[in-house]
Image 1: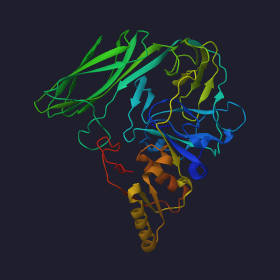
Image 2: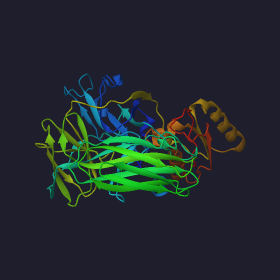
Image 3: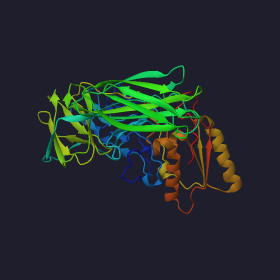
Image 4: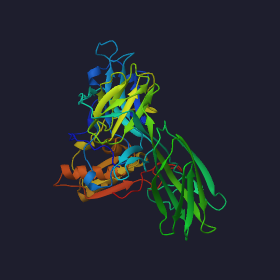
Length: 458
């Protein structure tokens, strides 16, 4: 599943001028920024404040889904408590953010599925007090409902990346099984279950020269999964009936030979939970409906509650809520954030961001992408080719590329996007060579240690 693809063509990078901060976030939710988190906001014009970035998920492998556009503004809320137009104590910036991974609606499997990011553990957004594209959350137009809705899809998953079996590629496995350790249990809990179908998805791997078998079971569900030596990895998409919201899964491995190893990759659940708000904030996912619009009926706390529709980054909308009810088009999947202002998330890190403008750089036949520790040597190599080969060059760090082409997330496919951008803007002098300076690794997230440019074909 690809990250949000911008629709606004970049005219140079938004990071090219002004004051900027890079915000690090680890999970989805509504974030609040004040002068406590970002002291540099003090004294800024509230109209000049903006937050740029994209949602979670990896860049698409498909060339047809690649966008060369840069950072795009999110629709945010700037609360000017005293109405003086100047950001100070008591004022706040609200925005919806996502972690590196992403829950997305799978049309093929008719459920929400989680995409673990293969290259990053955190996502990033960029805050500015020099906003050139002011975008504020606006109230959605009122629509007439054709169906009533009082449930939503609650999701849960376990996905621990612990080992890369062949020490190559994107696929990491979780817990290991063998003849000495044949069984493990995993507990998943959703927000509730109104009864009916529980949608289940999990993946298993067999590292052996013969067929091995897994048995996956929980209350109301048992499945025997045989995995041959030729089919090393197997994803199971299934469903069962239950009224529970807490599920303890027992996974048993029956090794086909004494040296066999089995692995669990992940387990995911979708249940239909009652739409009830207990305070703080709540992410509400809604599957595509049979009707064109739905009226949502929310129980629990309804006083002082706000609801944003946050399905796609950059297109956030505020829903008109009355007595815990709101209406919206539901022909496609929807995601909302319900909140009462009593609890917000804060970035795990805030750092000053230097200006940069790869979207406005000149032509480069040789592009050198370097780990920051090797940047001076990378510049020497580029200068050598300029002087002796007469070619144009561009030398950048990998993080500079990520900042503009993958919202700051480490994603080597951003390098491909940089090359495509250069080619589209400089057709008469397109890039011909790419030199990556750093230690190649299959462990791009440094789960086992190390900190160099990931080794990925561009």
